[in-house]
Image (cartoon, rainbow, N blue to C red; front, side):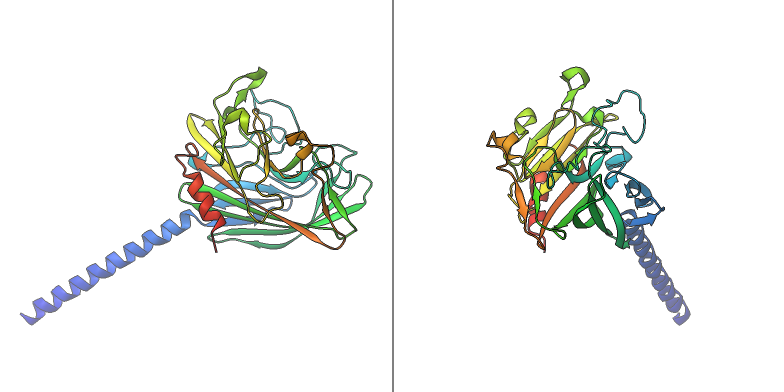
Length: 327
C-alpha cells in the first residue's frame, strides 16, 4: 500500500513539473515573440522583432539616416518603396521622402530637407550604443554638414524599438547641439519628424483621385482639415494588401511649441513640424524661427505606433495618455 502511495505521489510531482516546464516554455516563447534583435551590417542596422524583419536603419553614404522598410502588423509594409526600390504603381515624386526620417529644411539657411549636391547632409559619425532585448536601443552621434563641408551643429539621437501586442513602437529622442555657434531652425513647412506612407494608404490617390486612407488628429479634425493644424497626436490609416493598418505619431509635451503643427499631406507625407508658422498660420515670414543659443541644446521626442485598424479600433487616445504619463 505504501509503495502505491509513493508511486502516486511521484506521478503527481512529475505531472506538476511537466506543467511548470510547459508554462515556462510558453512564457519564453511569448517573450521571444517580442524580442528585438539589432545587427550591424556595416552600412545599415537590421532590426528584427520575434525573428521577423521590422525595419533597417540606413546610416552610411546617405543624405540623412532613415528607416526602411517599415513592416507593420500582419507582416505588411507600411511605407513607400521608392526611391529605395522600384515598384510598379508607385509615384516617383519627392525623392527625399525616404520612408521614415528626421531633418529640417532651414538650418542657419541651409536646406537639410531636400536632396542634391547643394543641400546639407546629416552625417553619421558613430554609434554609442546598439543593444537588443525586450526593447532595442540605438544611440548615434551625427554631424549636420553643409555641401561645402562646414559643420552647422551636432546631434545625439536615441531610437528605441519595441512591440506591444500587435503594435510596433518606435521612440525618437533628437538632441540638437549648437556646438559651432548659434543655430536658427527656420520657419518653413519642410520638416521635420516624418514618414512617407504606403501608396494604398493615401487620402488621395495619384492624379488626385479619391484614395482609401483617412487622417484624424487629437482635436477631432479629419482628412484635409488636419493639414497645418496643431494637435497632440495625429493618425493616418488605410488599406495595405486588404488589411486596414495605421500609424500614429505622438508629440511629447516637453517638446518646443507643444502641441505641434502637422505637415500631413493627402498623398502620404506625414510630418510633425513645430517651425512652419508662416505656412501653417499665414503669419509673417520668420515668425516660426526657433533659435538655439551657442553652446546650448534643444531636444525633440516623438513616438510612432504602427497598429492594425483605425485610430479608434487601436485606442490611440488611450495609448497617447499612457505615453505622456509613463514613468
